Length: 232
Image (cartoon, rainbow, N blue to C red; front, side):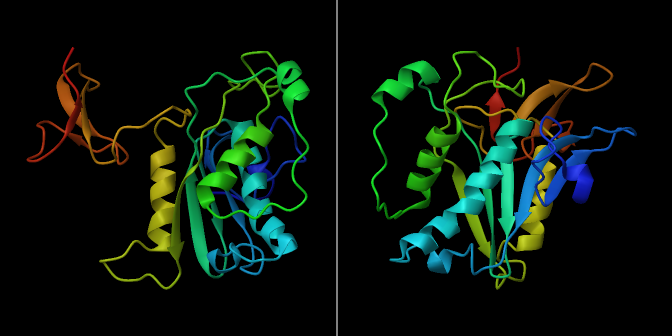
């Protein structure tokens, strides 16, 4: 987990998230697998997301749009925003619909309404995704990443007040999203349930089972373990 210049988006040095979960390879540039932002709760808190003020609404969603842009450029599915009130974690997914070329979408595009009140996380994520990922007509973006049609973000919000073993805490959430990012970070239409198991071959060619998310390996399928892929 790094910050500063190590968090630079290599394709565009003007883009720098506050935090980056990187793979240290000895020499830069390092691969950014999860991007993070830090914002004051006055600008990003669930307590103000339903404000009647259009300007407050805009300030509330601006950090999420910005972070989504970082994640698109580094081609990762994971991102998070931490404030002094809570942390928001998200996972990107892609729509089953193919991306619309920019030349086609422009002719049909209507001016946005002057006053739009966002009432849900899903609606703003969907709108943000559509705004951010107009297709160029190429299967890849300018940064060389796959050009996809974004679906609504999957979002989890954890308050700082959470504590103890019965609740998911922010520290645990930050740790876990980085653990997830050590595995596959490509953006898909759907994902296997966390905690399920797949059958793989280890370095010696022996069959074993690996858990989604934690990547824990077991020689046998644990009791009550859910197998997501049958053996070939």
